[in-house]
Image (cartoon, rainbow, N blue to C red; front, side, top):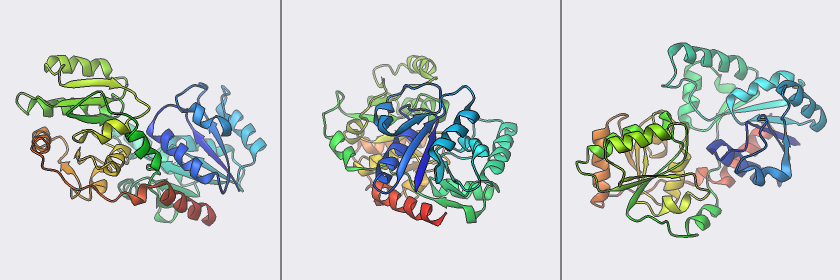
Length: 344
């Protein structure tokens, strides 16, 4: 059986990370090839993919993809992001298709018109898929509720977030910071860092240090807000790192002020490393991962006062236990994908 994974590019994103993990786990049983639709052959993860990569870089993606299909003759094509599944129009009928949905169909930042377009587009694309994999129960329910998919062609498989490598990397070195909280994610409206700054202000005179790992389009806006709130000595924009795990492990807690998620990988990693969690109850993921707040501090979305109060509790040493993370191991995820592929 031949598998073809379709990605956008090789950037250091969550989708690319978990795809790499999954492919490594599947290589013992399947022949695996990768197609990237971006014309850019660069990215931090390219070196990890290089031995099993075919880059689909033609200006005409459909023609290039069709040629690749004819050459490789895959049994199953896996689209790692929902929008990529539009390429399925050039696939032969005997080729099975799987689309992986990582985020909600309707996004809070979009207008209702754009959300309707997203919903209609996803419905048209996904009804032609043999299987749609949702990375969380929340996204599964979202797709069913909106009528985008039927239960018969939709399933939930958690991402293969965890491996023993994480423990090794977490102990590789000590961070250059002490007594800090950590956030991991791109500097973007979705991640809610502006709400985090509001929470810090509500601590009164915040003395706690927050290290943010990531880059993104909102860096200048965030820098301006940090200056406006006089938080330059408390909030550190560290940038991207290839080893976030040592920062997560040694943090007082991981903070997730996101406006929306699909399944926030960093919360799984934090639980695995026994780092406390404070997260907004956004759609989707935090409630599911913390078991409705049993294994982490879950804050009603947008309640920056409550978010601040939980930071204060952590400062006082009031911690919660970490959730069991077995379902997020590579072994568990690969077994579920084995079952899925054999059922097609």
